Image (tube, rainbow, N blue to C red; front, side, top):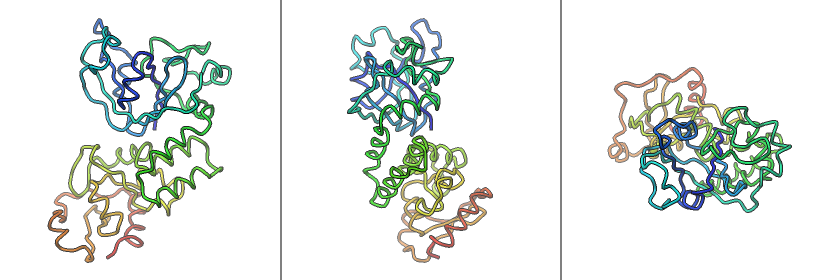
Length: 308
């Protein structure tokens, strides 16, 4: 999971209300712009600090990959000088009940400012040439601290579509004083299928092991060893996950399917034949073997979750 800072003085209302970021791909003269290139580097689950009128007014959670897109019509004269060809990134924004003005806290934040591509000047003013800039971990931790729990509250709200068990787990994380604010954020995002865990799984699992679908938008990051049985380290371990299409994820979580060490699917005799037929569950022609660490987690799944 990474953190980003977006300057939205001209487009705050459009982007925050519309749930997206947009930038041209290049400067008006055709030259590349580091802060526009950054649009191609964001990942699902990343956190965005929205800066407008000298304040951080909203927090966003990236909800999908970047894509080419023409300039939004609603920008009107605000984007008159920008080229029409640009980058679009979907972001779920949440306005802050208590915005902060970084300039008021610059003595606290200054030691964490990056030497290059900093979103803030040393005096606390925003860098006007910046659109989207990476936020180093120390600076992110400082901002999250100044926001006084609002980031965690936003992540908890994002989990509202999860089941009751998920919400209980998230409450436990929020109440756990033995983990840092950053760790708490990462664990909550992992619970709701975003952020660090998902990206780590994607590095190891490029497609669904049953359907073969590779488009990340239609895949769920599923824990092999159930979340509720994991240590904090196991909850974020990419080897403890598979990318699965939603219906396959359901069967895997409920123990109706599992995998052997060679990566071949095993189907429970409790799964109705009609479901197997409609969902076309069958042995894979070219299974991919599990990693050694995946094997240990899958041993647990076969012993404690699989219905046999």
